[in-house]
Length: 219
Image (cartoon, rainbow, N blue to C red):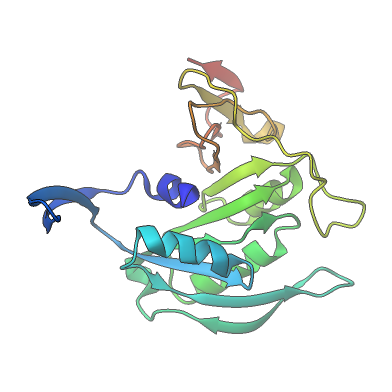
């Protein structure tokens, strides 16, 4: 749910009238483009269920992928999505961004079906996977709860030494020149625990990535 809040926090809102047990009131609701949650099966389904608790009107696209055990190539076995993807914001849910093969394949397939506004949400990722995803789909911003140091000897998972954003600090922004490939620096924001990787650089939760400025920290 926290990741869902972060990935939708910049979406436009409109006040609508609702009825509570005590009274009528005006409450903000997401407006503009309709949402599609696109979990990569099967692990992404758990995250999608939590996100649907916050945005119950969102549609769901199902992307079935598995990694071939020898080559780690993503193999598709199921795909079902709304027909109007070109009119919707699609949020891809892939819990682990390791080789990025599954995430890349999912975004490829969605773009083939007409999606043109896509975001990627992951629980944990490694710099190698972030680099590959950004290189192939630079227009897709990435949200991460933690960034690990790298792969295990076989790139099937992360090492388990992730860097979460947990130290309370004043709101900060970190601009990173993508040509220098500096992905592991973290600037924390109060009481939150999510990284956002964006290319090119609007913002990352905890990190801002930009191709227009050299690496710097600005308060």
